[in-house]
Amino acid sequence: MTTTKTANGGFKTKIAELERKIRKAKKDLERLVRLETASRNRWTKAYQAVFGNAMKLAELKVAGTKKQKDLGEKVTRWPKESQRLTKERDLYREKIKTEEQKLAALGAELATVKEQELNETRSVDEIVTQVFGLNDAVVRASTDREACLKRHVFPRLLDEKGKLRRQVSFTSSNGLRRVVAMVNTLTVIQGDLAAKAKQLIQEFFDRFQKAAAVDEVVRPLYELTRELLVERVDFKVGPDLYRFISMELDEDIFPELAQAQALLRQSIRSEKTTSYIRIYQRKDRTHPWEVVPQS
Image (tube, rainbow, N blue to C red):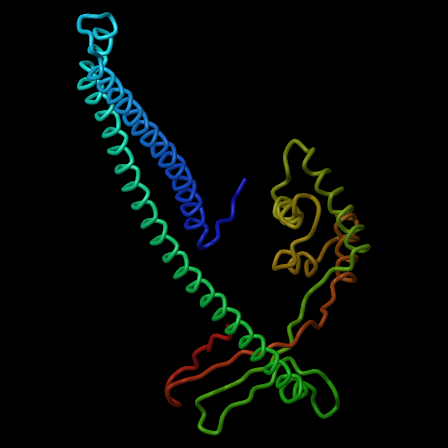
């Protein structure tokens, strides 16, 4: 299965991928910010608890009690707990910084790709506009040329008696440019007659094909009739066909071919088709004519 790719399709795919990465990076950044905030809140809450315990410890009037011991242990554990919570907070802050840098890089890349896409879109629009404009010009020129040919050139193919000429030439006064108008003819074979002829040729073909050996005198005729059949279906309109229908055949010796020959002679006709022109030019009258491209 073949796929069709648009000129700027690659940019759209890349933009979509970058936008997906940016959305994910923003979600990751929001999650890290929430974790960093929670870590700071835990440190603040723990500090307030330690501060409260320190105040209670200072207000105790009796030393050596269990309460004094518990409060003292809580206050004593604070430096390590503070260090742990601070390290946790700093780790989240580093991750936030990294994610912010990643997000900024993705944003810059996205902006660059979008700018490239915009330039490519402008370039594609310009190409499409130019191609359509040139095509319109070609169509207008072709239409104008055909109108000119029908009005001024092709009518000259008819002679004074209204008979159609094979061709007529128009040469410029300086002898350097020439327009030749022609009528294209097509040789066709009438289908029903050709079908009967093919059947007769096939009978001849099969009869000699089954023989153990083909007589050397008959072999050229056998080869020619075999060449006339195209996959046993149709005739080749060409030298072999004209050679066949111009041969002198004895009806008593080759009855199938003689009848097929007569049918093919009746079936062949020439039909007039479209008129057309060829254009020539040369550097001077001593140089040969050169064909001028028309498309």
